[in-house]
Image (cartoon, rainbow, N blue to C red; front, top):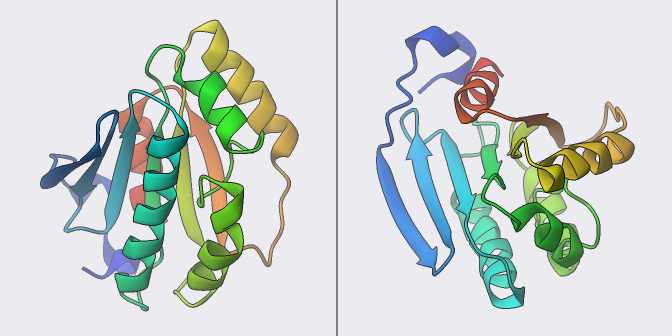
Length: 164
């Protein structure tokens, strides 16, 4: 799919395929496999490591002419706080874990870009704290391989990902 000629209105946000990466973490594809959505229901070190490794595998096979588009759904109760701890206090991070940042950054720079990562948070206290933390972390860097944005709604996040 040519992402430059596709409007958000013409993209189907019906899940195409889904896989359970491990207990507490699933990946779902949308829009002709141009958007991957990760849903975190339970966070521990093993889940977070599996997620980071999955991101690397996906990026290694990502078409070089297609910008990376991912949704990180952290809206399950209590997930945001633990995610933040395991992510070394960086919610805005495609790599998920600090030990994968250099590898993920290098892979992202090899793709058409910039990529986009939407972070979906809950309206609970932990989600709002996560949004505050993301706001503190956000800074515009024109050379960055990824643009991040936080949402409280999956549909809005998918629309934003499809726009870019």
